[in-house]
Structure formats: C-alpha cells, structure tokens
Image (cartoon, rainbow, N blue to C red):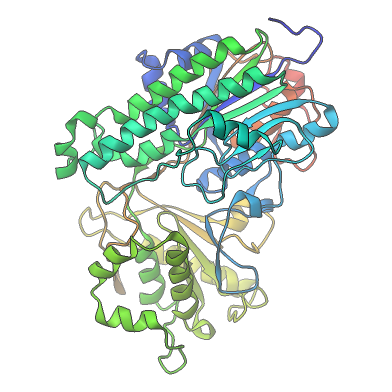
Amino acid sequence: MTQPDRTPPLVIIGIDAGDPELLERWADDGYLPTIQSLMRRGCWGITSGTEMISEHGLWVSLFSGISRAQHEYYYFRQLRPGTYDIRNMTGVDVDVSPFWSLLAKEGKKVVVVDVPDGYPIQGIAGNQVANWAVHNPLAPTSALPGELLGELRGTFRTDTRIDEKLDGGVEDDRQIYRRLLARVDEKGALCRHLLAKTRFDLAVMVFAESHTGGHQFWQYRPDARRTARANAGRDMANAIRDIYVAIDAQIATLLPLLPENANIVVVSSVGLRDQYPMHGLSESFCRQLGYQAAPHSAERPVQLIDGVRRIVPESWRVAVSRHFPRAVRERIVANQFRHGTDWSSTTAYALPSSYTSHLRVNLRGRDPCGVVEPGDDYHSVLARLESDLRLLVDPVTGRCPVKSVVRSADWFGGGTPTLLPDMLVEWQASDRFIERLVHPKAELVQERPEFFRGSDHSLHGFVAAAGPGIGGRGELREIPLLDLAPTFLGLMGIAVDARMHGRRHAGMLRDAAVSER
C-alpha cells in the first residue's frame, strides 16, 4: 500500500542497550536478517557525542535533540537543587519533550510504545503506551487515550516486569531467559495490534529485553572471563544473541503492516562492556585524599542505621539490604550521603553512582555549605582532582584505572554546571571487581556493594536506516546522537525546533540540502 499524498510515515524501532558491535557482527553473520536487510538497503553507523557519557537520560537526549547541558538529567540519583539531598530522577522530572510533541499542531498521528524514560503526551492523536514492558521501570504503566490501557490489559499479559536477578543461580537465569524471549514475542504482538488499529504518521516502538538480558547473561558469553556460574551454565552461551534474534524476528513481523514508502530506523541507546561498581573507590578517593571530610561524631545526628552498621558485618548488611523495597534502599543511600560528610570542611565529594564516577566541587554560592570560591579556586580544585586521579594505580595490572576525566563545563558548555557533576570519571573496562587502588599518598579500598554486576555501558549506540528519504548508503561515520531528532523531523517534513542542539544529518537523508537547519 502506498500513500502518495502524504509524507512517508516514519517508523523507529528501538533496541534498548543493543550493543553496536554485537548487532553488526550478528547481522554480518546472518543471525539478524531483518536488520541486515535494512543495512544493505540503506545505511548504518554508531552514535557518538558528549551525551553518551551516561546511559541514564540518554533516550531523553536522543528523542528530544536537547543536550544534558539543558535538561541536566544524567543519572537516576541526583542532588535536589540547593541541597545535599539525593532524589530519584526519571524522564517525567525533565522539562523537555520528545520530538513528536511537535506533531500535535501538524495533525499527525502516532503509535508510541515503551520509550525508556518516556510518558504519554496529551494533545497528540494516536496511541501511546509507557512502561508496559521496559527495563527497570520506575513509574507505573500509563497510556493515551485513557481507554487504551484497559483494552491492552484485556488482550495481552500484564505480568511483564522482568528484573535482573544478580544474586541468583543458573536456573534463575534460565527462567529469566525464557521469560524474556516470551516477552519479546508479546511486545511484537502488542506493536502489531497498535499498528493495525489506525493510520499513523510516526511509530516509535522500543524492545527492552536486550537491556535486561544483556546484563543478566553477560557473564555467559563465550569470550567472558569464566566463573563457576558461567561454567555451570554453558547452555546459556548464546543467550544474548538469542534475544537479539528474537527481536529481529519481531521486527520482521512488523514490516508487512507498514506502508511501502515508510522510512524505517532501528536505533539502540548504548552498548555493553565489562565493568564492576567503582563508587566505593571514588568515595574513598575523595575521603583519603582530604577532599571529603567525615562528620564530627558529636555533630552527626544519631541514626538507627549507625547502630546497625557498628554491630552487623558488612557482608550481612549487603545480604539483608537486597530484600528491602527499592524505596527503602534509596532512603538509606540518601541518608548516608546527607549525614556522612562534614560539608563545612569539604572541598569536593563523590555523588552516589555505581560505575562512572560523579565528582562535585563544594562551591560557594551553589552548594549550601560551599567552601570553594568560584573562579580560580574552583578550577584549581578541578585540576588537583584530575591530577590525583591520574596518579592512581591498580596494583594487579600496574596501570592507571582511569580511562577519561570529563569536566562538564568543557564537555557540555554553559559554564559552571548547576546540577550536573563538575567532573565525570570513566574507568577502564575491567572483568574483575577492583577492591584496591594505590595513590602516592593513600590506599583506596572498597567492599563489595549491594548492587554488584559485572557489566556497564559503552559510549556508543547503533543506527540503521532505509527508505525513500534515506539517501545514505553503507557504513557512515559516527553519527552525533543529538542529530537524530532533527533528522527524524526532516524525514517527516517538519521544521527543526530551535531548542535542539543537533542538525539534520546530511549523510542519512536523501536531500543533502535538508542538513541545513
């Protein structure tokens, strides 16, 4: 079926945390024939840019075209402005909207399913579903129009939440594997149902099983460092690939429902890599080197948790905390952070984060008890932090464990950040938990934390595109992530929003002239 009187519809299929190296490899090997067909008919590449420094908030940047420098969402734990209190962040808390919010005045219809950190937007025609089957949902399922949620619950299974079980065994992993494969099929059926309901101009549908499965089964992949659990689950060696294959097969079932002139884009957010939690070491770095001061016992409020920490061994506390509801665990983290520092004597401190470390200067005029003066003093502290980080050595490898040190003001622009960390530290990939680092002036140590996982995210995602509006052919150079939203608008014949930080990507579009904003 063709639609000659309308701008060709745009269909975007997301693969949450779909690793670009694995997608390209398995497409080349013939395991992902649908994605391979798009690559052959059109173009593909990897996403890049400053936004990729953190997986959290990345879908917000991708679909809004607006940088973290403006929306300031970089992690699920962030400071409450003007305080030392930690709050949990989601896309609902961000004052930017995805590019399809511009479609309301254009009279266009949408199908939007499970965009991570997304939510239904009022005033847009069509069907929108959020948090139906996503990775680590932090908000309840919702939909527009209002009656849609009841319709879907009457047609499809509602038991769609599948969490990682990091402390389980091989049989737990096999069960999660089976459930994830079944949920891929269910997500495909739900998407087909919505695509068939009505005419649409834009469809955005995201599969999240690649994210949960990628982390859960990372240890089983053939090139992973062998553990007892991995050796016991050798039948799981291709579990991640099987999930990608299942998603590819579901994409194939969607294509016959699309108009022949549809532009089709497959996009992933980030990839995966070996990495274990590093926050204990980043906090130890700030404390042992004198940046972050411990509170005076007489000034620190007496907390029940203090007594527990003195009596109960760390390993027991970690084991017990896994059984607390998420909200309770987050309150404990926030309480320990707020009361665990003498802010009046602190020049810089480590914000709670598992992998990439977030360091912040205790800046006068910005932080409640700031002691560092803006200007030269501020930059001097940043320089000293970076110098000390570069002096760290992993005694096992004999090498510096720091891969890169990013200053937010340089990376994102806009001067001294308000909410973003002043410095982000990306650590070298590691297939083992690093318990100890050495510095010429100190020894840094960390204990195994409650959240213990051997994988984190790489700094690239994947894009493949084909259709009448896609002029690119073959492999493109790196595609700036912030160029995607303007490019999507270009494919729909809609002007780029002036707030967007990217531009229409000439290498992807048929008419190179549309690269001009």
